[in-house]
Image (tube, rainbow, N blue to C red; front, side, top):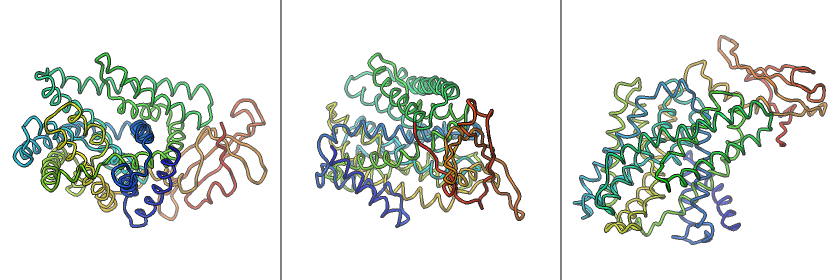
Amino acid sequence: MAFSLALIVIFGLLADYAFRKMKLPGLVGMLIVGILVGPYVLGLMRPEMMKVSADFRKIALIVILLRAGFELHRDTLFKVGRPALLMSAIPAILEIVGVVLVAPRWLHISYLDAAILGSILGAVSPAVVVPLMIDFMERGRGAKKGIPTLILAASSIDDVFVIVIFSIFLGMYTQGKVNVWAKLAEIPISIVLGIIAGAIPGYFLYKFFTKYDWRPPKRTLVVMGVAILLTWLEDESKKFGIHFASLLGVMTIGFIILDKAEPVAHVISQKLKKLWVFAELLLFVLVGAEVNVHVAWKAGLVGAAVIGVGLIFRSVGTYLCLLGTNLDWRERLFCVVAYIPKATVQAAIGAVPLEAGVQSGELILAVAVLSILLTAPLGAIGIMLLGERILDYGEEKSVYRFKELREKLGLPHVGERVRSKRYNTVWKIIEERETWSRENSRLVPVIYLRFWREDTAKDPGTGRTMDYRYTPKSPPFDAHWEILYDW
């Protein structure tokens, strides 16, 4: 396994660098590396790594979904509520309809088999979409109308909806009769239970972190542990017939902490951002390694045509969901493209029909794999290129300009400890304040930090403190200070 991890890190980083130099998403390079070193091409990936691939991919997905939760502000989420709900179901339904209309004739399969195929193809990939949306959010792109938040929220529910629809069609094939209405009722129940399952630990974590002054790395590890436990509970609850959307719950944990204690949330989010560097490599290289190009080849041009028809129907559905919103046609086009990539769900359930004895199972798997090869890289490239050209930079007083300033200067957050390089003294950040200042007729963000000398008193605020003002013209924080990341 150590050799496989070395392959993932070295070749994944090289591919990421090469594709970014070409102004393309680095994740596309990682997917290609995974395909090449995977068991179906060069066979360099060890079998023991492939056995635990699903667990590694789930943990990596948890990291990015937690980051997504820590970016979801309540006011922005409420602003995009109606179109997000529509986009969580209508595009997938229309894509399934499109596949059912053409697949029986073109692929010579039954209508039920076509419906199973359509439900596999109907899911958007959070693994591809979420990191790109978070990147836009961190840079303030599309902030004015909340477009990245809209896509984040919709895609997280889209997977829940599609997997339930898939289970209905598969149940019809394997069991003959399925209580469709009972299955459909699982969708809102799973969503609500998922939100509750994330909100409860999210609230207790907020109370815990505000009561006990833990170092940022400890907080991040606790949040990660709780999120992983939540996904384990989902698997265990299925044995008792209880279904809840654990990945939606993972996002809710971040949302609750952000809503209740924004400084704490920002600190955890920054640590998750560092952890994502490795998690991203694991996720996309291992997703690529799951792709069997030989199976995809069997689907051929006809399989690609079926995928294309499904995407046309899906795109029409996405566009219809955005009618009546304040988005212009270019922004709606961006949302359409952002809803194209497929990878995570297709890699997870593409082989299930074959294992369940579905007559066209092998062909369904081939088309599912082909959909990953076609839509994941093209969708990611489309999202990045269109996003840079279409998404606005938000209002002049956008909160994302403070994030840009913080990133540029490398500023710490409340709760972090820092060391003065000149005097070798240790201080703690006990307060931060964001405001605006007018300089040369332009509004610029300003961040005030209050430092407390740890060895001058037992309680923060009772000993020696000092304030610093940081603007876009200030020198980097590490020019005079070092952030201490100990426990």
